[in-house]
Amino acid sequence: MLKLGKSERSKSMGLELSIKGIKGIFRDVVLYALYRLEEAHGYAIRSFISELLGVYTPSSGILYPTLRELEREGFITSKSSNRRKIYALTPKGREYVESRIEYVEKFLGKVEKAVKILLDIGLLNLLNTIRDLWESDVDVPPDIIVEIKQRVEDVRNILLTLKKK
Image 1 (cartoon, rainbow, N blue to C red):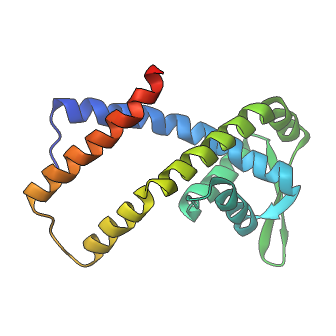
Image 2: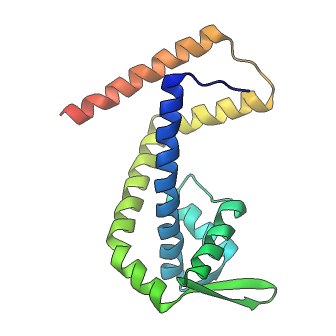
């Protein structure tokens, strides 16, 4: 089991708090997708969100519970068609989306910019390399991890200088 020190625990608590924020915006993105699609089955919603976010495709384990929750709360409705559930906004859901559309579109614009930066600096290639090593059961020696950590910190510091300008 992974043991976290005090600083790692506080970082993970910050991550947990940001995940709660992500859940809220994810609900908004699902509603926004239905607003744009008018009505759609889960796979179409999932594909639309994947296209919107660029590098993230929500899993069924995230999307369908969110859809059920939104339906329970009266934001969406569903009907069965050819063994699929077709979802659509209710008037309450449409009103909610229209009240938040500027916020959601601004968020999506920020995501697009962030994804472009991640692609441009090669971070997604790095993540894919780490996944390939993991899948191949390759252990990364501690000295290599220290070197990588230092280089990541150097990149982070370069990016932080942008906030000071």
